[in-house]
Image 1 (spheres, rainbow, N blue to C red):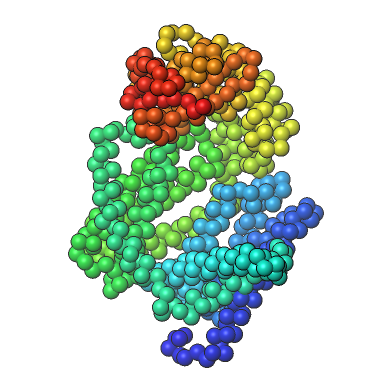
Image 2 (image 1 turned 60 degrees about the horizontal axis):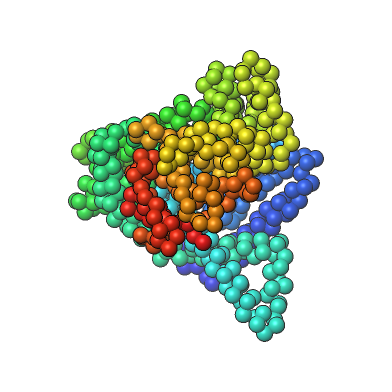
Length: 595
């Protein structure tokens, strides 16, 4: 049914074929552009424009087709694809090669957010220009688009699962027709686009049956659970202290995700209007209370991410996190102000959602202009911190400056090269030369770690406590550690326990009778997540360091240790005694290496 009129079977077939062909052509165009990437060096900006326009025009046109005729959908999609192509091209000027923007996860995320928020406004405006900002229409359009694309993508996945199983089944009787048919990458792209377009057409036909309202009804049931969790967190926070929350390990990501989920649940519960919104008194009160807690979550998220910026300076990812956190705080303040009044608070929250959606579109567009050049911001921050002594050489994002942050980053690297007043200047120049000889960030990191191995081994020998006794390891024993293992242990030793001790220790003992006792032991340390890790190692000047998997014989599983185990090991509160072979009895665990 479309607008109350009965469709003929011919109209249904025509729309299905049209959307399927549109999807296939779009997929083939994207494949052709990707397959001819090597020919883009002559006109990279033109290639970027073609790729961006094709991708955006296809996605938006397929989303609009159904509610609109295919002709109107293709024409209407131009209103978004053309300016967005221009914005992406403008952002591409930040790079020596504009195509490098396609490797930038932050920029791609911003483009995706702009598309997600702008497309519903465009769809509503094309159907009813005067009511382009009406919340009920925007709400229905946005959730319907998400559902249509989601189910259509599932349909594509199921289709290829059937193809895979069919190929495997027919191969058993030496029939390879399907296998030969799908061997071409171009065919796979075209078929995927065809199936996607067909799925979108069918989803539109069944819009009266396949509705997002079922999912929204289920989401509103999660509001009380979310409210209890957030309330418990905020209640317990003063008892644990903010220093614990904003300590060494960043909690900004968790806070941001929780705030986004809370906003989504509130919006789902309030639906398109008061008639469709949650009516149950308890659920409605829970929705209102959760909306009131959103500003507190968002404020904590802003605080957490700004604290990381103060500690380590700006990067594009941190700039994006700060932007998201501030948007969440604006949402939260709007929600908090909306629920203060007794009557009409749900309608006010819906108005906040419309205003904030438009703000997201505006800021996402500005992000791709020189007004919000996060590469310049990040470069200036990193260079200034190093020049002022607020950051040491290991904290400089040298690879990102050279390869990821465009022209601004490369200019910043030249500024660092010219800054010869810094005590680490010679080492900086050596690292920059190494940087320009390496093809990947992993190779660069390994080269730096290998060159620093003697110094790192000496530093680790000074920091790594050895028990029993008070001896220190011979640095020569540590030289054969892999660079990543050396870095892992050094990072663990750099972390502190509550009593101020370095969070690392080696418990030495004859765990393997076939190996010298002095070079073998269990190393305990804190990892980046604050968990205690345990490695069994055999160190020898004659051979490369070897490692064995550790087992907790008491639990018959992998060892799971608390901070108390690390403290007990440092204080010597353990025993080593036989259990077939020797094992470490520590804080209720029985640790033994595998044989």
